[in-house]
Image (cartoon, rainbow, N blue to C red):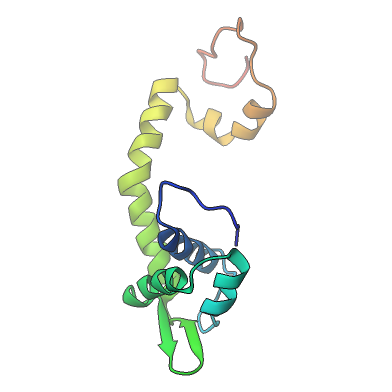
Length: 137
């Protein structure tokens, strides 16, 4: 986990989001134990109650289960549920902004698919935009 924290979002929420990302990325799999509250608090110099609050959100969302005396573990089906929820959230919240930017900039599907090439070789400021949409600036 990255030790940097954003000021605009509560730390417990960022911690929750990082665990979610670890599950989606396959770093944490179903049945895997989460790092202990104490170890996370110590490693990132956080109040243990902050870590516990972030973990409790995961429990409340049924993504993590508590096992008395053993710790917290990724729940069965958590990965699939997260993928479904994150896809829905992206399409509802993020995609409209991304789509508006694509339209505003006049980007075509080939432009987007060849995005790494375009980023590596940007057109000079006095080069007219590609009106053919074929990437042949």
